[in-house]
Image (cartoon, rainbow, N blue to C red; front, side):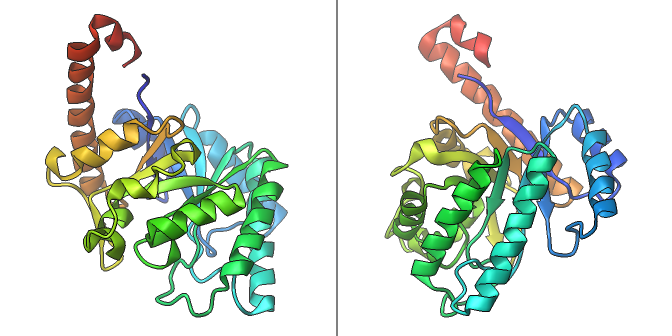
Length: 276
């Protein structure tokens, strides 16, 4: 069994410094988040972005859309059409950048699903998955701390009915009402379709829209062990946007892999260490 690739976010605006930090601390890649504010709008801006992405080599780059209140399943047809237009433009951009994975959300930045249509969300997401696949991009749906994707039974339906891939955010899952009230377990977000999860967001939990690092391995150990069992989940993003909590989480991750490797060797013998 191989280690997943460990990535950090593009949380430093100076990409030279971002690359230096990532390589210095042994990260495998960068999870590049687009917002509506930093999305290139002209060919010149796109060309500039392509140069920035190329400058991050040899780090692998995967992509994430943090578009608040941009929903392809909006009840207003004009709003939904505009969101679809935006997401399609991002998919085309990522394809031109030779990216192969994009994580998106349903209902990001909202506090109610009243303006979202379930049926339109399903149909639009299904079409978006096909659109992305035709351009070599795997579209992943992320679970949020609230809303439809915070409920394992609805998250499962969105994945199954649309054919999309998935990203498991372990901090969102921890604080979701469905898990907090013990109606569901953390594992229920992925158990129906473990083969559909391509990536994970790693931190302890989200409180008041801020991500907090684990204080120690005990905080996230069980969730990490579960992630290791997802067969396609090879991209773990330490989703902290400040250096100190990021490196604190990285230290916990190293401790986990040291323990995990020792447990494998104990169980399977020395041959297991060759893949770790």
